[in-house]
Length: 205
Image 1 (cartoon, helix red, strand yellow):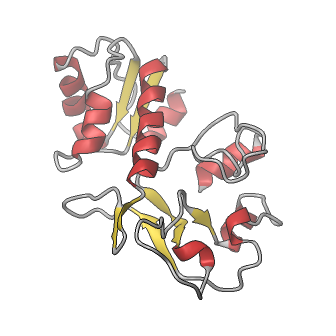
Image 2 (image 1 turned 120 degrees about the vertical axis):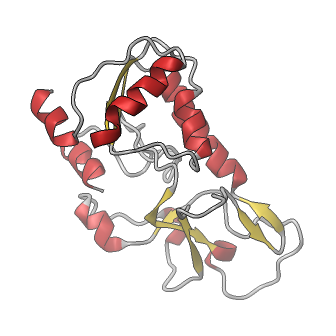
């Protein structure tokens, strides 16, 4: 959350639209989006819109269309002391599932419920936003990520980009040069060795 807090302090991010999906549709567009492609600990899938009684028919979307933000202490840390997710308004308690893709095999980007597959569109849309950002950016910096073979979706997102002329910097310690060469072999012409660590990258930036 440190990234969001720093961007919020600089007036470059807002919680309502800054995660790549709309929490408050009438809110201003966030100047910067922070896309959490594996979710985060304060995102939850709210079950049955928070209802604790009632009947639900087959075909019902039981988990809603997007994560809800429930952790008040996180909101305060980000500078939103009075923020309340509209989908949680008036709820004193509700059943919810963590909206977090765990580092397991295989990584599954959806929920399987008794009513069918849910949230696949949410994750696909979020990843598509990331792909669009990478395809149009002038500079891409990969920090602290070793791009393991098991992360097929993330590797395809980065290595499969058609933006082969992007200025590309990798900071991953001892694996930095190996990853730089992997990009070069796939036709990326803008790979530049700046720093092997995040600290060094910040110092030289």
